[in-house]
Length: 77
Image: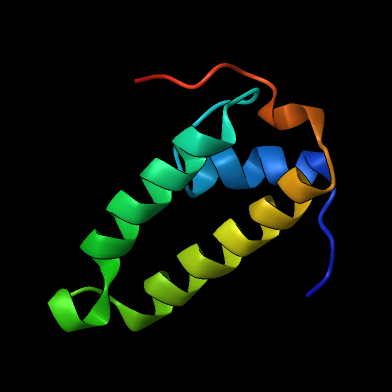
């Protein structure tokens, strides 16, 4: 898996997760779980969209683990 830039992460947050940076990574995880249920192929979703969502989340997770400041916001409840 290749590392993405912060600019690419901002695009993923906006285009895939409909979120704006800065954001709490916990909020990204919540949105990912909700969307993955909606897009899961066994529940009538698209396999292609489900895989794209997973890839986007994995890229954001890698950037989060590297200490990116994009994820410095306080989590919402």
